[in-house]
Image (cartoon, rainbow, N blue to C red; front, side):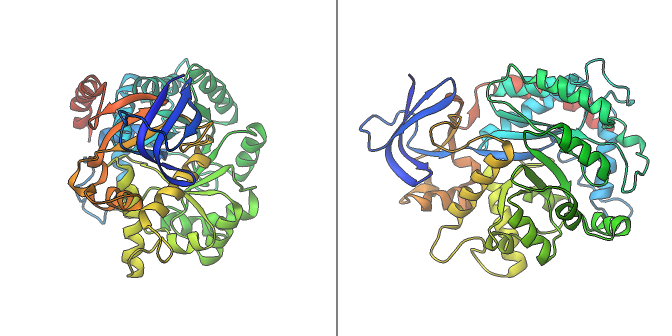
Length: 450
């Protein structure tokens, strides 16, 4: 049985030295500590985190929407740029862009991804003969890179609250309940050969699915994670009030069985009552701090949510910048800026980096529908840090984690193991050049569409 040895590692019970991790078929079978062995596999090992919310195709338009228009720019104007970009993407492009995004995730501290997959059809909206044409491309990108995949096919039927008609830019996303059933069945087949993959589903939002459709979906798919965009923008909150008399999270908590199976993506704009209700539900708040900053969404009430016992994880969403430590840092800094304090997300005397990392690991695992961490039963996914990095000099334990998150960032990553296999060495994925070459070819063509 293969064994990996690390000088020290962050285990569920805390830091340990002389760690030997036994694994088989990609899963951890046993963890030993205080083992005298050469630490040839890395001196400082962390459990890999999950990017619990990704639209991988949007990696291809990163940097192409940073030009101000004639009116105030917002999420809604950014969305029009995305629709234009989507007009030219082929199934082959989907695979090349996803592989590049997944490779970057692995190089930068993520070992699992929740792909919120809503790009289903051809550019003119015509369904593919295989409903899971794009899902198969995403599964192929996962297989090539080694990242663990939770596939979340998206149900998207309407353009706004109250069954508003979709616009032309949304035609590649659309399903009704029958065609979505075919998509789910085909998606299950698409990931069947992918080790350790998970299938959930994702009603896109309360804008895109009616109450009746939500109820039907939950009755049809009784296992696996449930993810939904909610309360990302104030316009969405106002439109939901106009439609139902309630705010989005308020409506969900009152009308749907929100529990540990759910992940509410963004949930940016919450009242104190909604914050407490979401925390008590056991659902995960799926936070994407870098994207939320990039789109001008607002700031999630993180300190209040954590104080209420809330669970959270982080995702890369639009993939405008992919970095696991960077998402955690942005989350903490957003709280510091709005509350005008330091170390906002931790308790007195406790490492802020450790608090963020532990919560993101646990929340990501729950939202991905898989065990994660350095423990028996979890996938053998580890991130190791450069021991000779100046930013880690003279540091041990949680001070190393704080320096990783708040100072050195993903540049401190040395090796990454996915399912027990070393896929990143000296910060570089073993398929980096081939994947980057394919990506560059696609982007040279697509960039002209913006």
